[in-house]
Amino acid sequence: MTQTITIDPVTRLEGHGKITIQLNAKGEVEDAHFHVTQVRGFERFTEGRPFYEMPSITARICGICPVSHLLASAKACEAIMSVRIPHTAAQLRRMLNLAQMIQSHALSFFHLSSPDLLLGMESDPAQRHIFGVAAARPELGRAGIGLRRFGQHVIELLGTKRIHTGWVIPGGVTEPLSAGKRDQILAMLPEAYANVSLALAAYKQIADRFQQEISVFANFPSNYMGLINEDETIEFSDGALRLIGPKGDIIEDGITAQHFTEVIGEAVENYSYTKFVYYKPLGYPDGSYRVGPLARLNIVKTMGTPKADQELAEFKQLAAGPVESSFFYHHARLVEALYGIEKIEHILADPQILDKHVRATAGVNRLEGAGQIEAPRGTLSHHYKVDENGLITWANLVVATGHNNNAMNKGVLQAAKCYVKDGKFTEGALNRVEAVIRTFDPCLSCSTHAFGQMPLAMTLVSADGEVVDRVIR
Ligand code: NI
Ligand code: MG
Image 1 (spheres, rainbow, N blue to C red):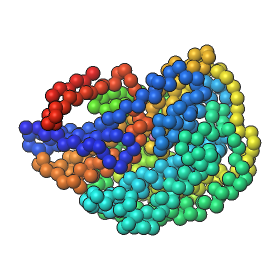
Image 2 (cartoon, helix red, strand yellow; image 1 turned 90 degrees about the horizontal axis):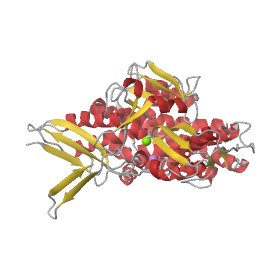
Image 3 (cartoon, rainbow, N blue to C red; image 1 turned 60 degrees about the vertical axis):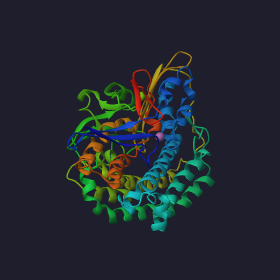
Image 4 (spheres, rainbow, N blue to C red; image 1 turned 30 degrees about the vertical axis):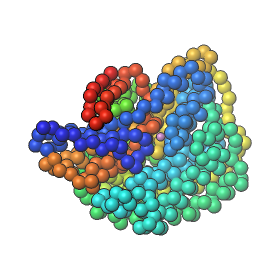
């Protein structure tokens, strides 16, 4: 008799997914999968819309990463318009992107994963949530909420709305920054620094207790991809992509948004609505790679800001080459949050930051355009084709969760093999399998847009719960 363990839903992540673990007759783990079970379909239903509406439409994909879609979309539109945006607009957008990265990283670390890290993988599931953390470690609960609020507040000050701001448009932004708002953001910085320092200290104190998790949480050699500047510093909004191999060797460098669409492919597996993204020259699945905080820190030589550079040096001590365990996404996330605060401070000191010229205008000058940025979870690409009237005829979004899909699945299998033995498992064991997925912090709402070639499964269940029929298209 074979047996399947199903974890449905996987908790404390964005969106709807489940994990299945297949056991053989001896009770050993044969295979395991992470299934994204929701479908969103934005790629199809934006067809026919004017291209300049795309930033505000695609931002509606997600309440966690709307800024990422706004920015990648605006860049794709600017490729269609064939314009370069003013310096000040680029700086203001960069700040918006960093603010979102900080709030999203705070959400992932504190709200979603700190219950496992601070209370323990085996702790009472009824208390294993952010309120449990706030009760056990009030100073950390406050720091988490404070750090997320900082990011959200910066987004609100810049874009006048916390979620789904219309401030970012093709060509730049609608409004310049006022001196009053700049000073408000500056005044929030000391508390933000204090909160992220507290988080880093708390993480470093407990990380040693998770040696077994570190050894099986998607701990394997892989390729990594992320944006990087020509001076080797980390980048979230511009620059070009670099893909490195398992030993840190550069596989391809200088991948622009246009080039991205030529070298990056999307594969489909019949158990998930999220595609499996890979580097075409290496094929699928060999061309799979990881993106996001761990990948970015593995790629860059320097953050380009002093405090984060100190932290990066410490992070790089974890391994001789790239840091391989996905457990260290948590660590990398906190280093990036610190960088984000420093970089915002740096941008606010730009003498042109209050400049009134923040928008370029143009119509359709090209019938195709692509844009790419680093979302909190990793690389995000928007690629559009339009007709002469600027109406969308085709759209493709490639999201961070798709890039990480192969590694997430391999990681779930690796952890399941460690924690499920002889067909026996505890609640804490299954929580660890879920926690592998949480290290990647996937955003499932953002990741499921394909129609047509995706499998659609229907299950007919009788009143007593028995599966009567199952149809897969
Ligand atoms: Ni999202
Ligand atoms: Mg797609």
